[in-house]
Length: 591
Image (cartoon, rainbow, N blue to C red; front, side):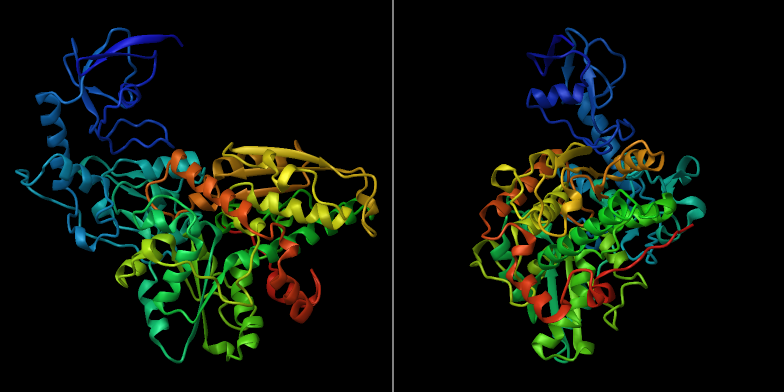
């Protein structure tokens, strides 16, 4: 579209015709307050915070949904506009639970921030907040409708980004609220526990089920041996959660966590490397059954299994495709099983005394640890899961000056990792890590991409694919793959996943391997990551992830010395008896 001339607060500027007033003001460097607007979601225009005055119009315009027209004259802060916004804010506050100190979003609440910016110190409207009714039956996500402002961001997130649609506005007039079918708990509907609704809620109406208190109690119990694992995306999110610029802060993070009193600080990246070994061999095994044995019952394409939101989604929506899912547990659950078997043996600790705590970017990991399948160590494999936000809260509570900490290293046995494991935190990272290892195993050569960087599977496009043709000369035992073109796909966000899985179900694609992450951007955009989230924020986290990969000494999972030791002393071989016993599982259809 051509550019048009508009005047904003007396300054004439050129903007693209058809863009909204909100976007044109952003281009001109003018801030307009919003609550229902979010860059990841469709436009709603229902909060009325973005009202502006347009010359010649009888009523104020809703900036987020009104397109600019040639020669439009806009005033964003006239007396009429300021009065309207203050009125909207006061009405929202009158119906809102304003017990801010008890809210998880205190000091990071968009409603609170706007009230301060608009100097709301007195509210003449009679307060009538909904009674607080916190839902506590869901392992990952909690709701409190007394904090809800009916912006419908959560509804649009669940429907548009995730294609799950388990929450909707129900009721009429003053009794309307956001709820599920029959007002059932989130644990009793097909909610994937992904937490994307939390990340886009402007207030504290949605928040994670916290286990901070239980973790403090475990740390302070002298009878317990408390180990902690940190997921790849935490190292590029924790600084942000503490109010610092987005950066990779692995060494400071380790120092801060050790300062909290954990007995061992270890890395989920260790079992991310392990996942690549097991998953890569599983894929090769499936390909051999199909290409050599002609086994038509072996399911291809194989999909990844490390995203618990994706696993719950397929159990509800595509149970007929469950055979396509890798049998590998997620890195979190592999770590939990090994912490109470392999690590307990190495440390000479009674497994019953080991408490395994995960620091995850994901609320669905809280759900995953409760699955009955995840007890192969003889105990509950993972005891507690904290989000990035919860870890930041503990660091602040302990008075640790994160920015001035000196870098420290992970403890041994399950603390070494590679760049391949780090990139698990970004969409496409699992696929890239798998290809780096699988290609070298079957060909005896490094994958033919400059610097091991497999660019076709990187980036924030919703669905990506790539093809790699195997050379004619293969390593011994893998001759059946000579000349085979391996077709792979990467998808993130469950709405995109639904599109791709519909094609898989219909037989319209012939991929061999698919990486699926429930959250937009992958784990770095998980439901437990710092708020806010938007494309710019996710890009910064992604850049930091790949920077970490580039500087590490080992960048291929099978090169990890501690993984080599694990197989030599404990597991013996990939897909072996001990591996199947501890590292693999199965999933079942859900109503």
